[in-house]
Image 1: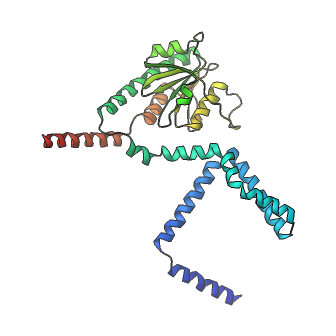
Image 2 (image 1 turned 180 degrees about the horizontal axis):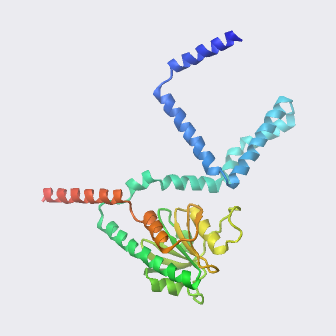
Image 3 (image 1 turned 60 degrees about the horizontal axis):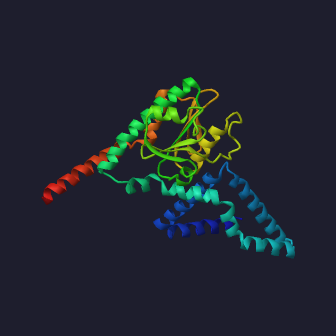
Length: 295
């Protein structure tokens, strides 16, 4: 026993002597990938699928150990085509993971334009749109008028927009009031905000399949949560029954907003951070200096 421990100890020491920084980096990256995969599938239907795969794997090992030839051959054939089956079964989760990578802060920070006049003008228009939305939903809250407003961000919602009517109009309290008036033809659908404009109305959103959602929530809330699960959109929802204002971001519903809390949330989520604004200003000054130098 002591000899085994002694040999194990020296084997461990020999491994440490050959251990390099790239090995440490390799371990950290693999651990991060495994952690991200677990985080992605946790509390989704993919979690149950993984449990099923693990059960089949245990059954395969057991059948191999007790020499069940037919069962082993059947499971081996199943695992040979398992990669294709996993892609089909986990398609929503794989799509969600790739979208999260594509809209990560590191990617979007260096891909969006900086120091651009049109981009700065868009920031001002978006601020006005946020104020118009807040004013409108505050009125809807008092009158218990149902509303569903989606702010498009990095993930484009062209397939959702195609289900509605294109408007491409400037945002105002009046236009929201007309669109969500209970006798208006487009009031049951969602309004999509693109580039600070009321781009489309009467749009049909996918319903969330999350079984843990409160059963008291209606179709409007489930649709708002559903589109936030499939994209990075910010969704504002007004309940027709209670008048309560809710928001949905990344599949999470936050209820009972006040005017102040809604304004703060929309500004934090949709308007550029101060650091980004400062960075654009510095780059703009540098560009102006370069132009003067060239002239």
